[in-house]
Structure formats: C-alpha cells, structure tokens
Image (cartoon, rainbow, N blue to C red):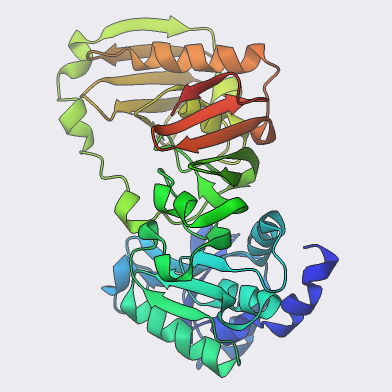
Length: 366
C-alpha cells in the first residue's frame, strides 16, 4: 500500500463488510475454516485483521450449514492484494471508476472514499451478495452506484470510465470494458489461461479499440461465473485401457525444474505458450509425481510421471502431442532466462488477445 491510500485503509474498515459466519483461510490447515462471530468473537476479529482471504459464500449461495461448501464463490480478498490492485489502478479523486465484482463491498467502499460519491459504479451478478454489500456500504456512509448484472457487459450508463477494476479472475477480457473506457484510461484485471489457476494482474492502457500493457504480479481470484472451466471427467480423456495404446517416451526435465508452485512464473508462462490445454498436478504417491495435461478442443491427453524428484516417463495420445508442446514451451522460457511475470504483457483487440515478452512487437495469440 502506498502512503496516499493510508487514509482510505483507516476509514474503510474490513470488519464492517464481513458477515457473522465466514470462512477465513487457515495457513496451518491449508483450508478455509468456519468462524462464527456470535460464538467466537475473538477469533472472528483476529481473522478479519489478518492479511488472508476470507470466503463469504459457497456454491453460488446454495450452500447451507457451517462447514465449507464445494466451490467458493464470493470472498473478501487479502487486503495486501486489494491495495496492490488499487495502486496499479492509479486512481484519484473525481475519477469515474467501474468496479466489477462487488463482493462484500469493501473494494467499492475504498474506491468511493478515494474518488467520491457517485463516480464509482460497482457491478455484482449475485442479487443477494449485491444487496448485502449495499447495506454495508450505506451503513458506512459510502454510496457508489450499485448495479446487479453481468459485469462482463460493463455498465454503459456510467461510461466513459477513467478506470476499470475487476476483482474476479478472467480468461477473456470483454471488449465492452475497452469500449467504455476513455482513451488513456486504465483497465486492471486478474487474467490467465485455463492451463492452471495461476493468474497475473494485467494493467492495460486503452487506445481506441485496443488495450495493452504489462503484468504486474501473480495473483489468484475466483473466476467470473460465466468463464469457469467445465472440464469433462478424466475418463472422458483416458479410458481404462488408454495408456496401453498411448505413445511412450521420456524427458530429461526433472520434477525440481518442472513441478513448481502456483505463484512462480512457469505455470503462467506455459499457459501463454500452450493454447487450449489444462494441467493437473496429481498427488505424489510412493515417490511418483504424475502431471496430467488435457486438451480443450479435442480429447488429446498426456501424462508425465516424475519419479523421486528426477526425470519422467511420458504417455500421450490424441491429435495433439501435448507433452511435446509443453516441453517446447518450457525450453522457450528457459532459453530466455526464465523471465518472470513482469516481463510479459497482454494486448486486447476486437480480434482477440495476444501475449508478448518485453515488447508487443513480438506477440502470439492466447
């Protein structure tokens, strides 16, 4: 957080935007755990004060009970992540801002405190989430324009915007956001491919029908509901006897080189270079670490099984040779000095999205 945001951080209290029953992420358990304010007030306030994400809704609101549901669908993001996004947004008093993904309302509240009143438009697809956020914003004396609708379409009535901020992860950045942003305006959005959950913050400057800019840091957000991946089950790709007929090979890449954490650059970069592919790192078993790859345009699949941290045996089948594509992408990245997220950028045009390394002059479709 930069010093100019300190007054807003002090004024817009996270605790005012959280429900009584919530599910903060517990670092020791590596899971979201229920905390009820009425039963555990000390634990509730301690969780609210931590720099950690807090789930506030499961399963699009269909979840009941205190235990976590299946899919987290609304949350209070880590304060450090929120204020990192706000810093990238480079927003100031009087600017018109579109905030996509109201959630608890805290980010809309911070923008309203900084920019003032009705200059902020916040859009939320879930009516119940929007209503609750509106009540909390009103109680805090903050009054942005609150819209229930599909944030993918933006909101024409508030355009043109000086800034657009999304607090949901996207796979496709809508042309509507570019169209509704003034020339020179900025769009800040968590973006990535379906390859993994590993996203990065894209900071794009709008010029006519085009928006282009660099990624600033890795991040992970819940995905826009309309862009959630619905992948067929494993057996749709790999029937019981499929590995017998698959092509077999090996690789000199090791698990130490290839199997990395979600916030390192490699999974993100592989997604940029290998289109329409999903990677799933399975649990290690008896020294074996399987990594699966599934095609999104056909039933191509591959599996690399790394043994005891060393090299892997590889099986692949289908019209594409997915492991060959992935290994080529890895070697492309390694040959360029293993660049991190900030050396990559994204350009959005009416024709689609193109990624690039260092300069937009050398770009490729994603």
